Image (cartoon, one colour):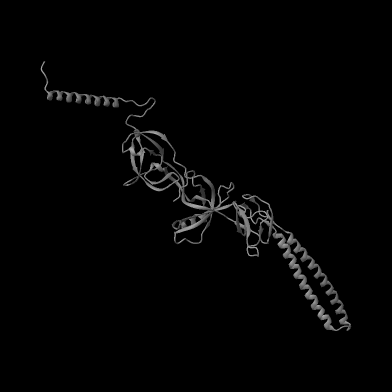
Length: 409
């Protein structure tokens, strides 16, 4: 048997290796071409799975988004008007209080004593006046009879007038004492939610401009001084203040004149908190920011809005009638502008250029390019091109702007 040379052996090994590799490639190709779809699937092997939605015509609100601040329509800092020690606290911090409801009782005993003294002085001076009037009547009678000098009767008339002035002063002192006694009973000036207590039972309080200018309160082991006893904020109804660009001012004013515009307040997480009405448009433009401050009023029946809270606001300026809408994710951005993929006959897609009016609340408002009724791709566009065959996995309707999350500019 003849021996192979080393070079011939190497050639033979290389040929065998090449044949093995070609066989593996051919086997893999047969496996790929012969692969069948999963059981129950009607998707052709060449179809691209996508989700889709229909372009629909409907009325869509024109919305201006902004960040707003919740504000109380009325907020009061309750202060003492007389000096004394707190004897009673008639409410709990954080409690809803009614207008006229008693909140604090300042020690009334000194003021009751002052009232009794003023009344006693009034009674004394009224008796003095009565006596002087009797003397005047007697002197006038005697003067007519030339029994006494006329000057004596005239002098008595002046005494009567002096006594009348004294009685009037006493009456004013009684009224002042009664008022000070009434001030011992501190009542809620408005209805609303009471804040935290700034005084404790037994603290000495007084008016901010009186001899006792501050009230002493102990909180968390620390002693603080404040002339404010508690604050009360009205929650129902309540304001939300926000700003809009000045270029929208004319449109807002015109539509507001035709009827109160609706304002929706959303939480930072996108939850609808309350629906209200635009009630205040500020009388000047903020020149540094180019914005106009506006306020909306909300009934706030369930107290979803809280003073000082930041919320997202949707000011519904107008209603776009019968416009074409698609889900916002259906619209793609290309070098030549926006476009969508429309699913046509045989489930083949076509790239269609569109012009947008607005994006809001998860939908895109189409000004040009679609007429309504078309089925557009909402997910999977990056694998598509004109003529690509698709398999629709899911069909979803466009989002409703009033139910979608508010989007702040």
